[in-house]
Image 1 (tube, each protein chain N blue to C red):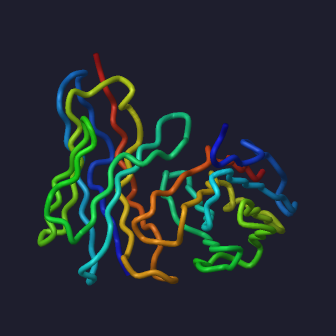
Image 2: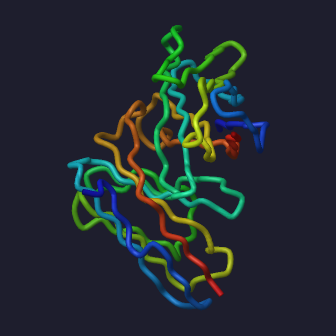
Length: 117
Length: 114
């Protein structure tokens, strides 16, 4: 079974600075997808960024980028020019490339990000 | 317009009661899900339906019964509620049952069992 680990329960960053959230995962599969979801106080889960394991190039979405290290099974999220609206819980998630019962989204335990002035 | 809507947003009930949570999506998606988020914020899938067919049933007690009357709706009925059922329940949908599909989540239903 796949597992996703987020070792930082809480992180803090000053506005306009850069912060990196860590995520590692365990799998025996070679093809899969990795995601970062954001959950603000409103509880809504919002997709931040997505990475296909077969792609070597790291995904980027505006101020958000990932550092995907497949051999190390590491998938960190970098937030540049942090804004107050970035304050939220961030969840790393894994999904097998196989369809069927194996294809479920497995989440990490989350990292709470605080953004200070 | 809300893409994935759940009702109610908050539900407070006594142990032993039966309750339902409704979910509707207006995105035309084929696949819908129920996730449970416990008090430690851990999110775990419960069920997944594709075209009204149950795809994933993640060892959830049979007190939980999902029902999908059509592709746009996936309701969750819970019998004989227990204290441990207190959590936030999220409905989600995706265009297809495909691993790279983006999930659209509802805003959650906070269930408190007293």
